[in-house]
Image (tube, rainbow, N blue to C red; front, top):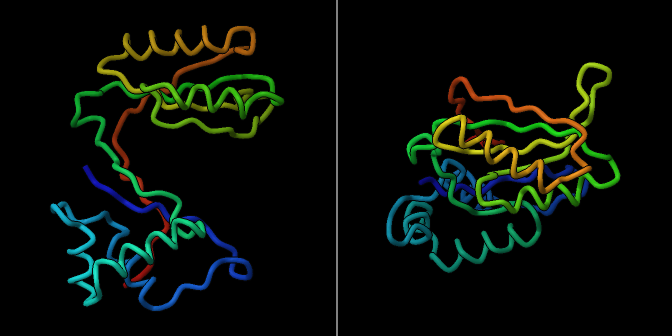
Amino acid sequence: MNTKPALRETRVDAGPMLDATDRRIIVATQEGLPRVRQPYHAVARQLNISPEEVISRMQRMLDTGVIRRLGAVPNHYALGYQANGMSVWDVPDDCVRELGKKIGNLDYVSHSYHRPRHLPDWRYNLFAMVHGRHRAEVESKVMQIAELLGDADRGHAVLYSTRILKKTGLRLGG
């Protein structure tokens, strides 16, 4: 597993000020924390600062929104989840946020989010990535989501992954 801080976009005129040490911490961790027993100590040694400073600065960056989250990013394929389907849903716009949260809390959904419709060709406004070991498992889970949504489900589809793409966020140069 790889633990990466996800960077938040900040407006130049409204974002918190980052000093050179903050930027060095971001560059040192943007590809993931070291896979060692004490990752913050390893970053501290690399940057020649104390582990406490690394931890406090990262906590400040989390608190101010410079870093959105720290979390494990599992490789679903390596864990045996070979069928990954982006389920797309046509739900009423006035409840898309509430429904997205419900779907996002399901243990087999890695993420859900609202996207604009592109009528008349694309009516779907809620997306949720569903993981399964095979397509039949994904289809079963999508049906569970449909039951959860009830009448709010005005139509849905599943788009399956055909290849693995490396996902990266914003990267600062070192």
